[in-house]
Every structure is written in structure tokens, then in C-alpha cells.
Image (cartoon, rainbow over all chains, first blue to last red; front, side, top):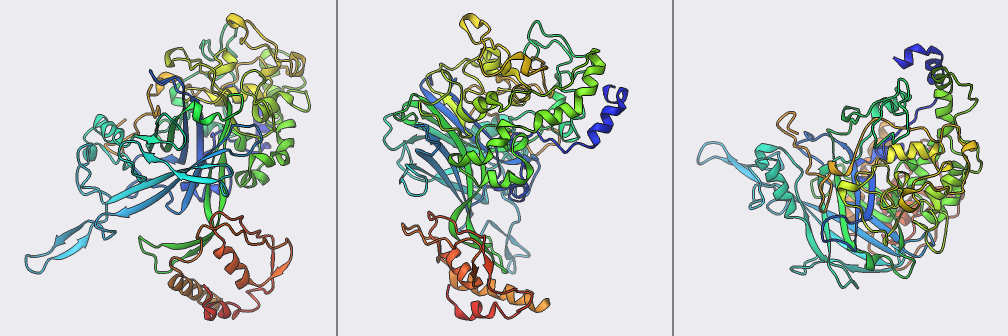
Length: 536
Length: 85
């Protein structure tokens, strides 16, 4: 194949540092030690479920790379952690609204757990079972669950730590405690995929949001991993040719030409297809999020732990440790892939502990990115050999990379830029752009003329890996089909001369589209079962 | 080395035993953050970090401790005996 035909390229690859493309799965050294607090993906889009115009859906995913069979404990969130979704609706790069999730884990029977009488009649002993369920669980009965995970949801207006905190309540009964469904242990426990879906759907709550006239919705629970990426091959020094090798119209729209030896779209390239993830999903009226700004909102999710943790040398279920001190942020995620392929390894954990308002410290990573230089080193010789060209550089040469500044730090004027512009990394959504129905969505989003898609927010079906690849290699230096009736439009950020391969159909070959997902809240699909083997 | 280990474990044990419910209450007071690169007693540092309210600003860990635990294996004794938590 391609890599063997060009051994010099292989030699070059061996000298190049690792490049990682997982939206934010284990992307930094420290957070990889804390998987329950590791944010993996953030989605934010104008709801496209029928009848939900005027609502915004925000989904923060945590706990990466879950094998569905990961029993007997499966994937509870951190009861000592603080999970937050933050919204900036004024453009100052500081949160104006924060939605805080805090979890409590309990065992049945007041933390004693479910016990069985074991032994002969008369001398039997009551012995706690080692499992999280002792029988079938369904939408109508959860009495066989030995482990219950609940959470509270709080909205803070103003700064997250000093603003006004108000509980969000169940719109039906006014309670402030919500339940997270047990992970999909398997089909014997839940009957079938349909049975699990019905069980999990019981835990979609209608919520009353302070100061908001219409109710929203919340769901926290396990979902099938929605991120698609050719992860193993990418980790292995991009062990494929990352340009569309076929004429898939979604990835290589006319008049694109297949690249000789380029990768071909295949679901088998998505190694996350057999994984699950944990979603914290909110759907809220746009009117309650956009404040007094121009309707563009920025969002990011964070996870924090108390600063001091003292391990209990005699750990119990209720007290494995004692925590104290200030909430200390350990994970941060807004735009996908930023902490993977933009921020340098020495600063990844620093980025995770930082706030958008201080993103000036990371500016060099955006204005002078290393990823295009890496791709150039990996593929310049093979590209020239394949095409018979004499290119001297594949990477864009417009420095500072104002095209990337717009994509990652400011949003695009007239689309998803706030009226006050503070360069900072967050996911920006124009709440006034009408949602595109699932069947009509373009997986490459704005780059394909679908203004309701990434980077104007992010929908589950947006192929952010391919968009990011193309953008870092200079796609914004070429006209995009975003004018009237899809007319090519020059963004004026750079020129084709700046990006020799900016019009190439870069891809990791792991396809995704909106029809891979549900078309109703919480959109991400029912998780894969832990059993039977291959039960997907 | 063994001596240090059991002393640290003992410290954790004592702290856990007397701590329940202590530390981390939400409050409005934000304790001062130690200036960087200053020398600070270990127990003072731990006391301050642990007692900070949840919504306060985390303390900087860019500090130098006033002793080297490897040179002074009894350094934790004061922390254990003080019962200051």
C-alpha cells in the first residue's frame, strides 16, 4: 500500500511526535488519571427534534472509552466531583450562566446493600451481594438495583463560584433530586435494547429553570459513543493517507477527485463504534440562555475536584476518602480537538485547569499551530510522489493564522461571533440560525453550506475530525459555499496561495452523519449492552 | 523509609477520624493564597488548603515546604498530635 511504496515517508514518520485525534478522550497526562472527570465531547446546537424550535440542546460527555462489559461496577460519575456547563452570553469570555451537576451514590438499604441469607435454615447469615443488581430491571421496576446514583442540578447566575445559585427543580413534582439510570449492564438485566431504552427514557426530566418561563429537559446517563474517529491509526503516526480516496459526495463533493491511495470512508475505521460514554444533557429555551447579547452564546464544560483529598486507609463505600478545600478544575472542553491537536503537550493539563478569559496564554498554539507542520513532515514527499508535483510545503503559510483564530477563538462575524469579541476558546452557537432537519444536515457543517452545523455549535452528526483537519490545512483560505443558494464565498481571512492543499478532502475515513443518531432529546443513542457478546 | 510510611498513614487515619463534616463548607471568605516560592510549614499549608470553602480560590501549590520529609521523618508528628482538623 501507500506507506510501503514510499519508505522515505515511513522513515520521516518515525521521527515525528504522536498526533492524537480523540475529541477529548484521555487527551492530557493528568486527566488520563482521572477518567470519571474527563470530559470527552461537548455538543451544542439548536434543537432539531420536531416541535422543539426555539430550544438549545447541550450535551457534555464524560468518562471516555467505556467498554460496555465493564462490570461489575460500570461507570458511575464522581460523587466528589463537580460537573459544570458554562455559558457566556455577553462575549467577555466569562460565564454568565453555569449549570452544575453533583452526584450522590448510595447502596440499597441505607448503604448496607442488598443481602442474601446464605446458609442452612436456622444458622443462615445475611451476606451482602457483590453486584449492582440482583435481578431484572425495567421501566416499571428498579427494586433489583443495589446501586443508585442521584444528582442535583443548580443554576448559577454570574461567576460560577460567587454568583447566585438556585436549584433547578423537577417541573412535575418540584423535587430537586434526579436519578441517573443504571448503565446498560446487558440484555438479560434489561430484556432488550428496547427495554433499556424505555427504562432510560423514564429519567428524562422536565425541569423548571429559574427565571425561565418555559420548562427545559435534563438527562444524565450512559449513551452509545457518538464520536467517530480512526483513533488507532491516527495514534500510530497517521498510519493511512488522510485524504478522501473515493468520491463519497458527503466527504468529497464535486468536483473533487479521489486521491490515489487515500483512505475510503468506512464505519470499520471508527474504532469508537463499540464504546459507550456518559452524557450530561440539557435542553433549554434559547431565550433563557442568550441574555442581552446578540443571540450568539459560547459554551464549555468543566469538571472539578476539591483541592485536597485524603485517602481513608480503612476505606468504606460511604467514605473512601475525605475531601476539602476549593473546587479545583481538572478538565475543560469547548471546541473539539483543541486540547488534542492544538495545545502542546507541556500545556495540556494547564489548559484543562484554565478559563477562557485567560486564553491569551495559549495564543501561539493557534496563530502558529504545530499540527500542519507535522502533517507536512509526514506527507509532503508522498504527496509529491503520488501527484507528480513539486510542492515545497503542504502547511498553510499565513502567519498569524487568523483563519484559525476565527474558527477557534472568535467565531465568524455574521455567523457565530458575539457582539463583544474576546478571543477565547469555546463552542459558539448562533441561536437564531434555524436548525437543519436531520435528513438534510451536512456532515461537514458550515464548510458544506449547512450554517446550522459545526463550527456554528456542534451537532452529533458533524464530522468534526474532518472539518478540523481541513481547516488546519487551510480550507478557510478557499471560498466556502455559504452565499445565496450556496454561492462560493471568500471569507477574506487568507488566500489559496497561502494553503497549497487547503482544498484537499482531508479525512480520517470514519464517517458519521445525523441519521446515525436519534432525532429527539437526548439525541445520542441507547448505549451498547454489556452482554451478550457482540450484542449491538 | 518504613517509618515515614506508617507515620503518613497514621496522619491520614487521624485526619479522617476527626474530620467528618469538616472543611469545605461553602462560604464567602476567600483565604489568602500563599505567595509563590515562599517557604511554608507543611501542616499550615494542608490546614489552609483543606479548610478553604468549596467556592473559594484554590491555593497555589507553588510553594516550598520548610522541611524535607526525607530528612525529618518525625515532621508529621506535630500534624498528627495537634488534632487541628
